[in-house]
Length: 260
Length: 374
Picture (tube, rainbow over the protein chains, first blue to last red):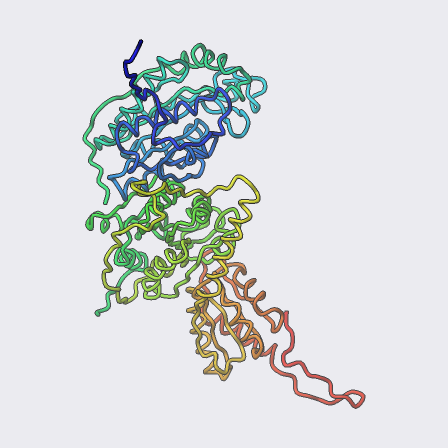
């Protein structure tokens, strides 16, 4: 007869920084994974109660509902500027912006580059799924060459529409950027690496080292017209060769920035 | 207190410092650049925030961010820069965070020129951005008045959680006048409870200029309109000059209001009973006072440095009770007192009561108190 007492241990739980609500994201979309990774990092670093999120315009416009942190929604592309304002007046707070590729790589290129140039001590999580998701799958600056979208029905033609913009490489060139990394969410192994990068980005901010950004290659099964598994495979086989993964910049300059 | 000779833009900047502004974000543009330059020296000196943004788009969004943290935040710009800020202003209005914006108007449209103008009355008063909202607009006519408005602007912005703009033309921004600066106010050390300061020991705060469902957005908009109605009911400000017995009412704001006063005084010397109403708040507009004045007035003359913008509001307020004439200079030209005096004389002539010359068919013909002019 077995009399041994079984002990239970929680091995997985909802992070405190993630609100206990359902998201509106489509099945197979990797926004949910990105959210969870960020929330886990905020919990692990113990900074949830002093974090402010700057949500963008796009699919993640509702991000303020999903993170259990203070949040504001910025105009399309302007999240780094709003984050700048928030951070400068309260440098002790952890400020992060969450932006998509239309937001960051198109309408907000000036804001992201200059936030990096100022060495703004904020963290940006950049979701690159190669399309405008919220508006229904139009061509983004990060759409692949030949990619058919609802606004490039004949495929992205380099002559007329240019080639994909490599934002992380661009930002990594900027002196004020302390940490720039591109990761992917297409497999458990890559997801673990993505989390490490996100953690590093927030640590850079906590150390006052300057601007940090993590680009996450993400899926959009709905607008790519693919099943979720197919979409993850498409990231791996089509996106990763165009947008190589890894840390593009990982330096530790002493931030000379001061707030109030 | 002693008076100092100060340039408008710099005086406004120092007044903001003394009103306890925590953060200034701006972008160079003539004729307001001295304000930015002054802040670049003064704010770091006091350990406060100054950032020269990459554009007016970014500047206004930095203001948005700092205001979300519950801090006193401001920017300044001039006409084309304010065009770029309109997106941000609309978000800020929807977010209901208090901010102050100084707009030193220049000639337009397009690149226009850097001369003083009032051509952005419509832009600021009627359409500061997309959607149904209005900033509270203050219009100074001297450097001293501009200085006195700055602390008021922050107080009103915070009282109503709204945008307050100080709308002046390049004359007031650029000229030097003796001014008495207010004493240094202590900065607020506690953020309001709605501010985004981190959800420590409280539920999270959200500043969300977004309502997905029409039903929700209508309720939200109605609430916003209720707030604007409270502002309209309580915050109308204007100055009256020689209006007690005035038959001809001049209306002008800012620099043109000030020049109109000179013309009014000249008209008085000629025996013409002219007076001036100078709106100090352009929104809310002193429409009730104008309606009252219209009851007794023979006519109105509106002088502006534009093609006729505020005159539309004067006509709405007067409601056809009396003729409303307009005198405007364009492209950065400033009206001379003589030009306005000539217009007063014409108005006087055109609206002079016609003597009763008889009756028709035994009945008394009601003589109009005033004749209509176009």
